[in-house]
Amino acid sequence: MKRLIYLFVAFAFCSCIFAPGSYQYAEVYKFDASEEELIKAVEKFKSENPSYNVPANFQLIDGRGANKEDFWFHIWFYYPDKNQIVYTWIRGNNSKSSFALVSINEGIQLGNWKRINKDLPRQENKNQKERFERLILNKVKGNIEY
Image (cartoon, rainbow, N blue to C red; front, side, top):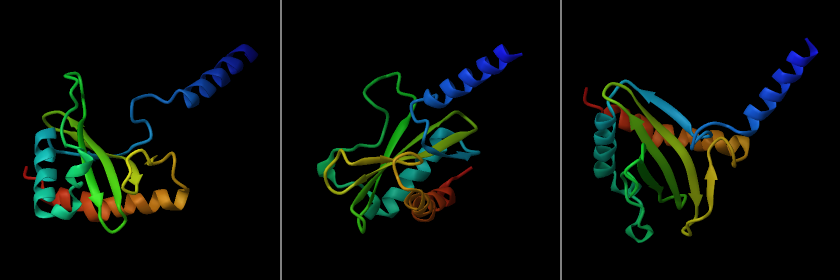
């Protein structure tokens, strides 16, 4: 019995250290919409709210990466009042999709990324998620055409 307990403790310890997935800390929102529908809703939001588009000099372009195996549709937003860049992604299939808030870059220099649910102090993390939901996510939801 002791051996079983030790094995369980070792497994639990290792599973906490080696969190699964490429974006294990992202805040993921689920949608009953296809990936294509969700991407169109984001594109509509960005065309109606151009202040949320990242300035062109950053060269952060929405879409899949150069790797043909890229499972994520990467999307970047900009908070002009805070001078922050928001990194998100969409992944899904024909009926269900996920829209994830991944990280926030502070300032106009890239490389100051803070991962949601990992690198930010608790209150700031909560504030960032609420801000994203209020300013972007809820409006994207309203743009989904089923």
